[in-house]
Length: 142
Image 1 (cartoon, one colour):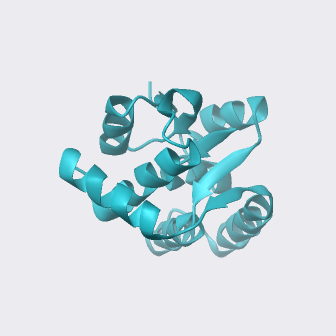
Image 2 (cartoon, helix red, strand yellow; image 1 turned 90 degrees about the vertical axis):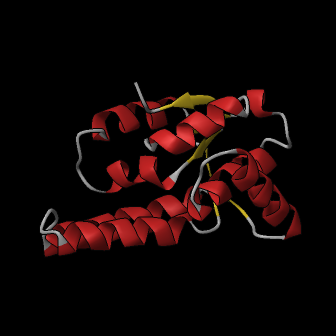
């Protein structure tokens, strides 16, 4: 099982330069854990790709279908006071935005504090740097 940031899931939904690398990671272990808001973050990314002209209507439909299918199999870290407190700690310790703090806090909660026991897949440099400082092994960025 790996914790996946939305930045790493989007290439699984719509063809991007990182798609092959993300497909390789998921082929080795298809058990995905995500934050509760990941579906919304992915929907936002698909919509942005459409608005920017990088994804046509057929691509948008296919990407949303892949998102729906993937979300049926993943495990979500739910919101709650423990997650909120951990996210606030992440904000105080690392130069993160709120969404990244929630992602990292969710990975921390999923790992039950044993960060060395759970890999984090991310394509966001700032999140990856903070995750490494917290003890996670980060996959996705080279």
